[in-house]
Image 1 (tube, one colour):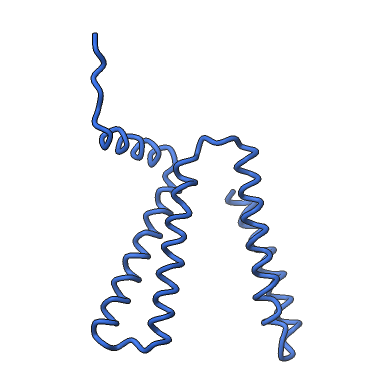
Image 2 (image 1 turned 180 degrees about the horizontal axis):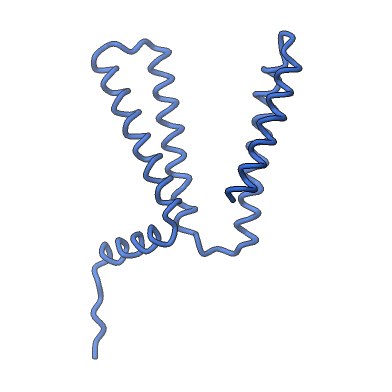
Amino acid sequence: MAAISQPQGASLRAAWIEQAQAHPWTTLGLVVSTLGVLVLLGTSIALVLAGAAQAPLRLALLGGTVAFGATALGALPGFALHRINQRLEDSMLGFAAGAMIFVVSHEVIPETHRNGHQTPATLGLMVGFALMMVLDTTLG
């Protein structure tokens, strides 16, 4: 008996539906960031066509669109590679967290500590970090 083969598109669609059912929160994040890209891109195009957007606003809208697009594209490999080794996944998440900590410590913290705002900035950082740890422990 010969096996009936499905068209490539049908098997790919079935694989995506299986992934979405197995990981609904990842799917929701991908959908939300994709919708964000579409809304931001639509707003950008409408403002540019209407002539209402000034040059800095155009650059801000373009930067936001690129950032949302990078988020959506960055979610795709994680969505597709959900069956990778747990240690490899943990290492990849650790590298991503390290990159974010570097960016925050290198770019954000020096800006907040200028002009005599050291104490409120440090307290805000500590409270924010404590809140993140509480949320991670209780929700994760």
